[in-house]
Image 1 (cartoon, rainbow, N blue to C red):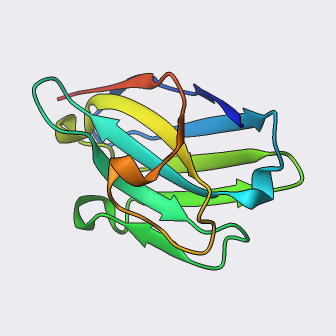
Image 2: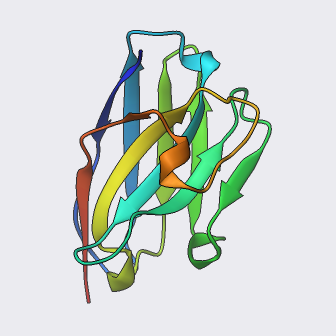
Length: 125
């Protein structure tokens, strides 16, 4: 079992940047593929980005391509999401999640076994 704790959320103006970090503990971090999801009020949780266990493969939802970058450091047990050129529509609670099927990047939330508590990102116009 792995415990995930997100940090780095906050309030930023449109066009600004934030870096989210997710710290894992309790299990071997490299056993998992990792994903960043977001959920706005009244909407379904959606994947933002994902990364396989060694970081060789990544995935981004179309709306964030070219603006967000996912990365991981297996030595530090962290996965980060660098978010640039943030827009009001990026406002959501952001969650990191772990998938024991470490060779794939699943896009469905139900494929991930472990979740963090979430961190709020608010982008003002």
